Amino acid sequence: MQTPPDVGRTWRLALLGAPGAGKGTQAQLLTSALGACPLSTGDVFRAARDNPKRAGAALAAAQTFMARGELVPDSVVLDLIRERSRCLHCKGGFMLDGFPRTLPQARALDALLAAEKLRLDAVIYFDVAPELLLARLTGRRVCARCQAVFHIQNRPSRIDGVCDQCGGALEQRADDQPKAIAVRLDAYRKITMPLLEHYRRQDLLVAIRAEGEPAEILARTLDALVLHTPAASG
Ligand code: AP5
Image (cartoon, rainbow, N blue to C red; front, side):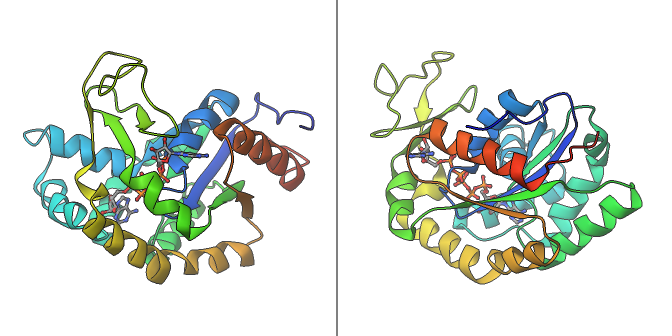
């Protein structure tokens, strides 16, 4: 690995990749390495599902789309992001996980950042062979209490069905069933993949081969960030 990226600076990143590419896993590792604050739209929707009384009507309606594996309407996602626009000014920077994933969302983010006089440093694309994704998704287990992510083969918990971190019960996500996975992968191919070109044209895309151990992928990502943003500015 090269010189580690400057952790004293502010990193403004977005993570792109297919369902199961490891965005959530890498977001956790990158947060520790760079200090940028993670914002996962999927996690916000799942938190709304677990606390329906605190979620507004739009977030509650989003659950139906999510359970089927479909994308939540852009208007709901964009309201959610605008409500959290103060996160874009977080001192340590931010790391968007799962947003944007449609071209209208990407254009809205461009406009929002321009209005806030901010700029993305990079959009990290985690590239995984499609044939690995199904096994990653069907084997995933998530702690119902602290949301830690495990995998029955790749990252098993010490005690079957019990979270290593907090002792909570491990569950399978409703959208990790084969039918919903097929819908999610199809939406990714048709609707999200065009974003690669959108960010390539802005010279923001950093593609990472996201196979191998998570720690190796993190090292590859940090190396690529150094090369992509050599003259780090605060
Ligand atoms: P979201 O929660 O964002 O799901 P996703 O994009 O489908 O991504 P996943 O969380 O499934 O996968 P991941 O890439 O984070 O992989 P992970 O690290 O967990 O969105 C869910 C839903 O919310 C969407 O379908 C949609 O309905 C809605 N939504 C969210 N944002 C939206 C938006 N902007 N617009 C519209 N709708 C939106 O890893 C997967 C598994 O693999 C784990 O078990 C892990 O342990 C394992 N693993 C990770 N890395 C490795 C590795 N290197 N080797 C082996 N196994 C690994």
